[in-house]
Image (cartoon, rainbow, N blue to C red; front, side, top):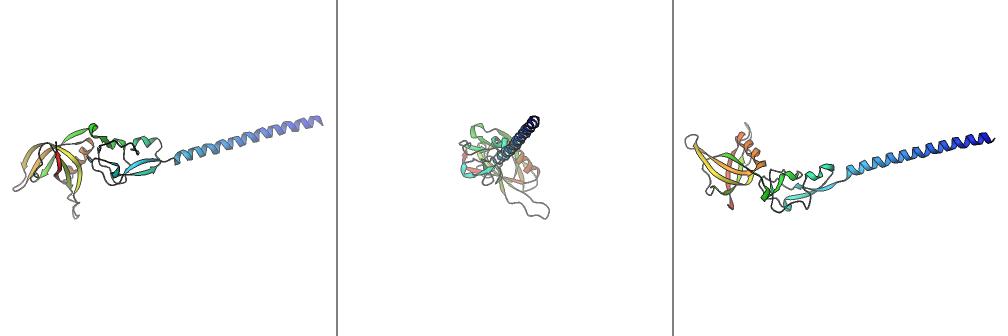
Length: 210
């Protein structure tokens, strides 16, 4: 009887150990899944553009809205509330609703500028001279049979570096080449508009002489 009782106690201990280990593994698995889900659901507050922000525009909190999003390790790549510097300027266009990338915003003092020459049809408006800030407007021609795109601002606050040359195209019309200083991110936008044949217009910014 004593031998049988001893065997039963040994079997019971083995079953108890296996049960404890099994419960522990299940609990650990549940905890791990919960941790992963909780991490994925952890959202952060970041800024998104309330309306389209044009390259060169000064950006304030009134131009932005706060969004709650899950970005994981990418959160540091976007501007969060409290992270917008005074006098911030858009280095490239930011579409309405787009999360604001940190690389698309710079302080005025840190803004990297690049020269670009654009061709403007017709005479320049009065006041468009070297040292003057201008907004660059573009009007697309539209495709064949399509309506022309409405004029829109491509770059805000571009600096006129110099009037390069005036070239006659045909009788009664001419093009003026103007060198502008624009944020780095706006160069590609201007070149793309020129390649597409969009008509560019320079509009002086009131009080924009430097």
